[in-house]
Image (cartoon, rainbow, N blue to C red):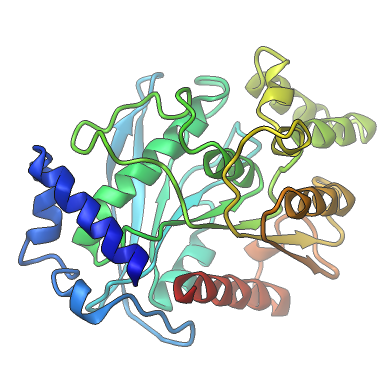
Length: 321
């Protein structure tokens, strides 16, 4: 893959500039990707791998909490596609374990999946969790080779508010606010990603806030007010409105999976975002799941199986492309 060769050549140059840690990650005889240039990146969604699952520290956030990463590593030679998982929780709750069933399903098909904790709004408001995610992309690019992953085509899986964070990271990968956390081992790495696969992303947080007010969901209303401070940031950090303002953004391929019965993030709001993204020149696969609510993938069933298969097929398409 031309893109992969160029990425590896770029990292090689960085190593020559003094990034010894990153150079070692590619050169280590224990790294499963040591022969990657010869074999190339391949992914078969129907494959089946045993997994090694482990956790490690990523970084300590501004509130003093250690953010952890949960790694789902296929037991095989690799290189495997690499995906960063960003959890939901209305910016106020949950952690790296929120999407474990989906993470395991993807990893078992031959994807290196790394789920990370994000700073929660009661700790530090917007854009702290977006800073975490931007850092997480760069950190995964650095770490992926030692876990058998390909660092040149990083994708993101985002759920609900994690999808909102994923959209901001992908659309604004070079935003100085979002990349405020330095990655000392590899300061030249950026947070560009190759694609996003999302379930019920909050693509328009202000529209979701208005819906919560209409339904008198006090806790959800407060979640928005806690996270978006000052309140003007709900418009500034709003993917739908970013597109409507015609800001210069990066438009990577998107997969949006939406429950037809979702009264948390309404399908009409999601469909509007998909149309706006396409009108801006981006590729957006929008899939509506009949009979499904906001978090349907948390429960076993045909529509959950369909969602997992859809994400795998989307990854395969992006890797092949």
